[in-house]
Amino acid sequence: MLSITKCPVRFLIAFAALAEALGLPAASLAGAETSMTAADVIQRTIEAHGGMEAWHRAPTISYEHTYVNPADPKDPWVSRETIEQGRRRAYLDWPRDNARMAYDGARTWSLNWKRDNPPKFHTHLAYYFLNLPWLTQDPGVRLEGSGTGMIPGDPKEYLTVTMTFAPSTGDTPDDYYVLFIDPETHVMKGTEYIVTYAAMLDLFGLPPEATRVGPFFKVYDEYVTVDGLTVPARYRTLSPTGDSYGDHFVRDVSFREPFDASRLAMPPGAAIDDSDPRHRAAPAP
Image (cartoon, rainbow, N blue to C red):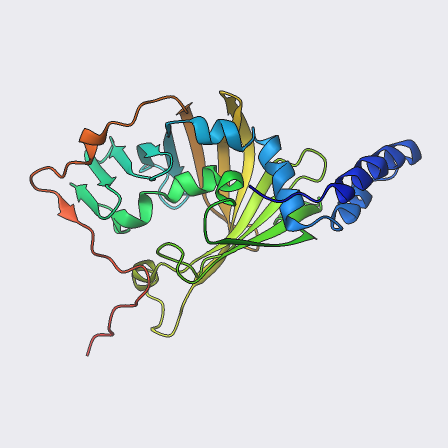
C-alpha cells in the first residue's frame, strides 16, 4: 500500500471549502492539488474507483471488449476476456474470428489467430487500460508527480501522475503512462502512453533505430460500477492532435467469475507466440 501523507489532504479539504465559499474556479483547486505527492493523488484515485481491498478480493476480472477501428468499422475486434487476480493468468475468446488464446503464466498460445498483432500483445492489453488505478500498486511501478495537464480536445485541466517501471518489470519496462485525474472526483479521465513492444514496432514498419511509437491517449467517456468497483464502459484512442484511432466498448463486467484453469491447456493445432517484446527483428539483407 502507499504511504499517505495526511497534512496535504487536510489542507486540500480546507482549501476546497474556501474555494467554494469564494466562488473560485475548479482550475484553482487543480493548482492547489499539485502540492500533493503522486502517492497522495493515486491513493485518492484508487478510493474513487472502489479501493484496493475490493479489487484484491475479486478472484478474476472478466468482460467483453469491443474495439472499432474507424478505418474498418465493419470489422470490430471483439474479445471475451478473463484474467486471474494475483498470477494474471488469462484466457480470451474472439467469437467473430473463431479464435482463442491463453496465457498460462509463462507462455502465450493462440488457436486460429488471424490478426497481424502478436497474441501476446493482447492478453493483457484491454485489462491494463481498464484497471490502471489499481495497477499503479504493482511491483516495479514508479510514480512521479503530481502535476497538471490537458487531454486533446478537452479544455479542462487535470491532475497528472506519471507511471514508469523499474528495468526488470514485465515485458516492456520502457513503457510509460501519464494518468489524467479529475481534480474534483479523482476519477481517472484518461491516460497518455507509448508502445515499445518490439514486434509491434516491426509491424508498424518503423526504422530499426525506433524504440517506441506514440504517444497516444485513451480518453474514458463512460464508467460502470460493478460490485463497488468503477471501471470504463466506453473510451476512445486518440492521437496527440485529437484524431481518432478507434472506439472501445466494455460490457458484461464481472469480478466474481471463478478462474477455469482448464482453459489454459494448449489445444491441438494451437501455436505458441514467440514474438519478442524487447528486441527488434534483424533488418532484411
